Image 1 (tube, rainbow, N blue to C red):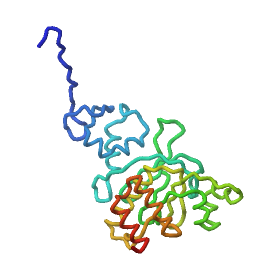
Image 2: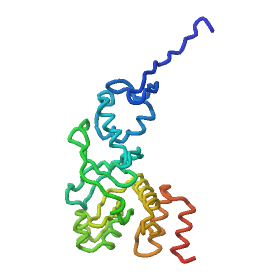
Image 3: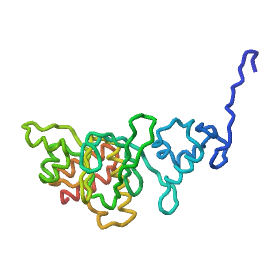
Image 4: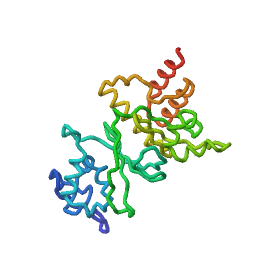
Length: 249
């Protein structure tokens, strides 16, 4: 070792406050949280809206419990932000929502007025109640739904009086009793699509072999499938197979 060589300092590790594994992954109020434990409750921790250093062990334990399914197994989830445009009676239009995308449902939360406030659960949608997920232009939305349904969208209803239709795209989630509309979020659409397909396959639903994206004709369906392919929500093999099916090849 040279005269002026420096010995690298190694950060001391401490036991994870949940499982006891030595770690320095995340500093929290009562110590450290290891990578594995963090992965089990990352989404729930994010929804607390707190500096990690202020999150207590009790809060972490509660977040981990909320990250389990009805069988007590940890389930992966993803938190995305969506700009809501209308469709549900308990929400305000043009409100920013946080969607926790789980294996069997989407849980919608709203944040407080301040960025450090805890997110509050508003409502949830079970995949079993979900009919379609699609990305559509305003003109497609107006053409696809009846006047009664269009009234749910708020901003879309005004388009009927305009000569010029916007080309902006929207994320549309159609359920049994209502239709939700959001500004397009490619990541959210791809994740929801994948989770919905996985859920239907696992539960062997009657709708498993249905095309989740419903359009008025095969060309429109192929167009939407191409968008999902570009987002990597489906594979090229799945895209080609579905395209052949739609074109009766």
